[in-house]
Structure formats: structure tokens, C-alpha cells
Image 1 (tube, one colour):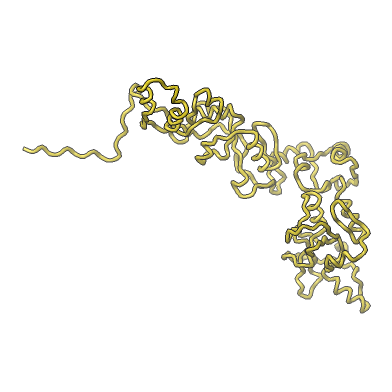
Image 2: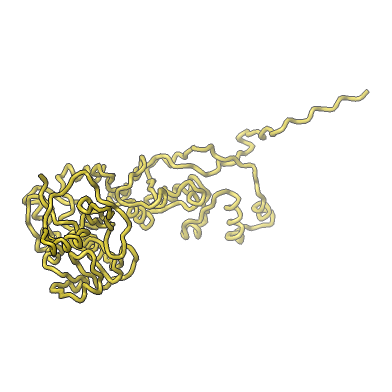
Length: 405
């Protein structure tokens, strides 16, 4: 037999009426029934998720519309929308948000109560002996205050341990290492919005697997920056790091082939410019950096506009203005000899597959160094010494006319 639980809050009105007729009171405990799942519907004005009032109130229980767990204490604000106290506490303490999760109204004051029906204005008229002024929370009973205080403490997550750290995370991590030979994931402690007792503990081997492959619940591990040898909590953080600390080829990004390719520093990016694009070798442009063009015609126009004063003689100026369109493009997929060094990394952008959050499965090869980079530079144009021939015309030449006698 399953242990007894408090009667569902939605049936409180019925049990109060029954109390007057000599039956069991509102605080009677009944065994929990099996085989019936709680209804998950949109919250109404006075309750978290209204029960399906079909006459069998014992089969249904009030659940929070955020976490879908049964409600012990309700959090109610001026808008009269209800959530469970634990979800509300997570929003106010960990996410630093005082907005109602349903209507987005800012709630400076909120009350934790057992009452599932009373409006916020009526609850405020009662005697509220406990209050957390920093979070703007008032409590109508000591049980709600104690549950909130316990959730905010640094409780050891080990299921057989009741230790409460008094000196924050440092004290708790030292206790876990000394007493249980386990450890936390520091990235999860810094970024995951969970209370202390909700975090997981790992052995050294489990922690390595957690970083590399995740835990089998949809989370696939913390991505790495191969350049810095540093792990990040999720793809968003890795993408932001690469944008700030590493380099991208703006020409490849503009062409749609390099949006996810990063270079360790400008030196490796400059090697890519010299091998796959057309960079200006003038000392002033080399000092400016990023003076590089997609094709030779753009580079020639830049030379005339920016460095034309250095050309002496009319003949030299005429030759500089001459545009030779007889050039060949490199074969698709070909790579230069300089690309053999592992100097690039492919990173998934957050908008590549919708919103990127911790737990999203990464594509094959994500965050790995790649030796092959797409080559977009046009091959050097042929000279007469190379013996290149004129390309064959796309249409057949006309046949010679018959000789007339």
C-alpha cells in the first residue's frame, strides 16, 4: 500500500462542506490511487492547473503548469495566477526575475500559501508571520517558510547525507570530496539554474564522461574550444567565445561557405587570405589588416585607387588599367598546400538549428579541428610559356561554304 498523502487542494471545498455534516475534515489523508495521471491544462485565474471536475475529485490533483509536479504550497501574486512555490522561488532567486510566468506582470510581493482558491488581496489581509524582504516573499505558515529556507541552503546532494555547508560552494565541494569521494561539475554549478541539492555528483570517470558524452538524458556533453583547450557549458557560450577571441574570413562568410569556420588568430587567417583569396601586399595595407579581395579584378581596382600614385610613366599606368579576363578558377573542393595545418575549427551557430541550449545534440564532428578548408581562390592565369590553349567554343564552328565553279 502506498503511503497516505494530503487530500488534493481542489477538493478542499467539498471536504469543508462534509466536515459540517460530521464526515472527515479538510485535512484527512487518503491513500493515493494509481493508474490515473494528472490533467495538464492552461492555468486559470485562481489555480495553477484546474482539475477536470467530472465528479471524481480523488483521481485528480492540482499540479504546477510549469513543472507538472503536485503542489504543496502555492505562490500567488497580484495577478492571481498560481504556480508551485519551488518554481516561483527558482525564478526569483536563480533567474532574478519577478515577472509572472503566465502574464509577465512584475510582482514585487508574492505570498506562499496552502490556500488554492483565495485571491491575493484576501491573503494579504491575513496574518503573515514570516517574510523574506530580499526576495519579496511572505508566508502564511511556518511550513512554507521552512521549505523555502531549506531550498536556499547549500545542502549536500548525496541522498544519505544531511550536511548543510555554511561557507558556500567552497565548503560544500570540500565536504563532497572528503566524505563521499565525489565531485561537482564546475560548469554546471556556474551556469545551471538549480538549487544546491539538485546538482549531480560524479566520480572522476563519470565526470570525464559527463564532459565528453553527457549523461544519456539528452544532454550530450560540454563543447570544447580546440584552440584554447577549454570547455564551455553549451553551444551558445562556445559561439560567443569564438566570436570574441578567434577570427573568421569575411569573404567566406559572405559567400556562405565559412559561417561556422574559425581560425585561431590573425596569423592563421592571413595564411588563408594569401592561399585562397587576393590580399594587397602593400606595406600600408598589410599594417591595416583585412585588406583582401575575392578576385583579382577587385584587387587591381584597389591598387589603382589607393596606390596609383606610385606608378610612374604613362605606359605603366595604361598597363595597370588593363584588365585581363583570361583566368581560371580552382576546381571545387581543391585545397592549397598551406591548408594541411590544422588551423581551423567548425562551430555550430546558435541559430543554425533553432535555439541552442545545453542538452541539444551536436552534429557529427562538432568542435573538432579539420584539416580541409574550402578553397575559393582562382588559380593563376596561364601565360604563353605554360602552353595553355584557348578553350573550345561551346557551339560548333560553321562549315565552310562550297566553292562555286
